[in-house]
Image (tube, rainbow, N blue to C red):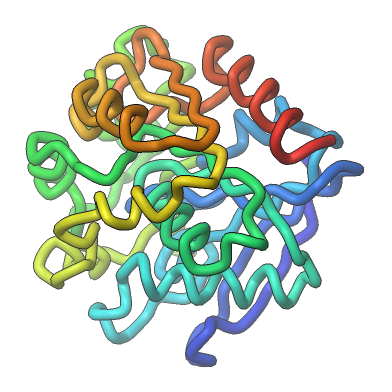
Length: 286
């Protein structure tokens, strides 16, 4: 997939940030990745939406090709959200549908509550206003400093060890592709996850991963159309939380559980993509 490389300054003016800008004839969509991922995480979805929407896919600060922040206290969703509005403003995008995976979904909720007139609809990928502690413990168990890998095969094996419960049907090639999206090769030829290990500080900082009570924020989104995609095997978003989200959302709301997926679906799965197509066409347009 061809995209333009877009560089911009962070909202606080400190950092050089990066985003992919995929051309498309339809409305803009802002795609926001999870805690340890980067813009490459959306390559499977970008291939499916090719040419139909303009896709803006950033690397959040400290991920991918975006500069790390020397102040680890800034690795927080509310800070990232400020960067996202600067990104949209710099590209002269007045309105954009939001697709957020995990942490990116929390960001989508915050953005829609702050500037609802700019956000016609949001897609939440395996995230909600209540996060299962089991999933947080699992993520806390691997995020942060770690030894680099000598080969891509080692990187793929590590990705499998961390994520195999979420993708039980993945083949060896799938894990290699996953590693290629999640890791990067340094100038010394060693391979590491494409994020600043300091993002792990979010598990110690208040609000670094998620504020303690997000239900008031969810209730504030009552008029915003929402599509919730939940991995059937998810350990981060429980079925009970998903049901409560539906009960407490009077506006347009759809939920699809993606079979044989945990945290978090890639969004190119047939069930996920069919729901996305219908939802985006209805609430964002083409």
